[in-house]
Amino acid sequence: MKLARFAVEGETRLGRVDGDHVIDLSAVAPGLNGSMRHLIDRLHELRPAIEKADAPRVPLSDVRLLAPIDDPRKFLAIGMNYKAHAEEAAAAGIPMPKSQLWFNKQVSCINGPFDDVVIPKVSEKVDYEAELGFIIGTRCRHVSHEDARSVIAGYFVANDVTARDWQFRSPTYTLGKSFDTHGPIGPWITTDDEIVDPHDLTLTLSLNGEERQRTSTGDMIYNIWVQIAYLSTVMTLEPGDIIVTGTPSNVGIATETFMKPGDIVRIEIDALGAIENRFISE
Ligand code: MN
Image 1 (cartoon, protein in one colour):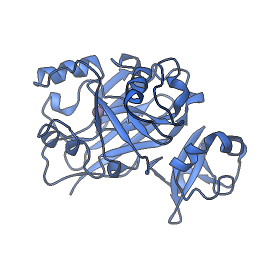
Image 2: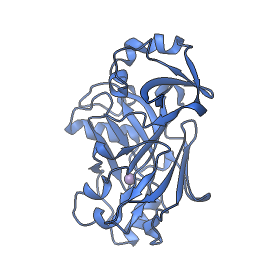
Image 3: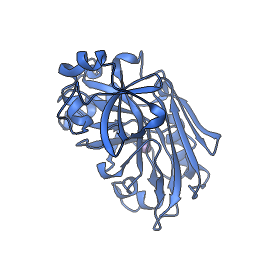
């Protein structure tokens, strides 16, 4: 299933994407107030009705797709999780981490899959990072590698937009990763059952139509199961929490080229769709 949030006639709705239409789930999943977190929390119970729902159908071209979730309680991200990217970072003077490097993006940075991303006046080094994201479906703690897949609800495409000048001003990365609009995600959540192997997907990013990043998600240093085991050693993971899994090589900082107003960044992952965002001045 592909689960989306969308706006139609000024209202936010949840839907199931079916080909080039979206089926409004207001009737089969009432009382959720457009909250994907609440839908994910009740997915087990609601799933049969959602799968069966066939109406009302709205052409995708008539709606504005929103971030598939805008109210997660956590937005976590792992850094330097592809070998070639960790090497380019090391070449730029950032030491290669000896264990999983986690940081927060504040949830207020979440942005729609096709919405504009703002280049803040206070940054001259805004950069893209194409990433595979996943969303937790089950409240859990101390999850083994073997059981990790069972706590995932689904996957999405993310751009971990980063203000490099702010990122390196402090060791936590938090501010440089959390400017408003710097978390475009989408275009929807593809549920885990539709994905054969999340570690065998092709991820690409193009800037103004020219390819900049390409990898298989199989090239992660710490795969998703290892990430879930490590994070859940520390904290309870809850339905709706979102986690992005690192970017491959050839981010802008590698060549000291950063986002300019008018730039268009498109990120695509096999089976998950694409997001495309224009960068604009503040
Ligand atoms: Mn990242």
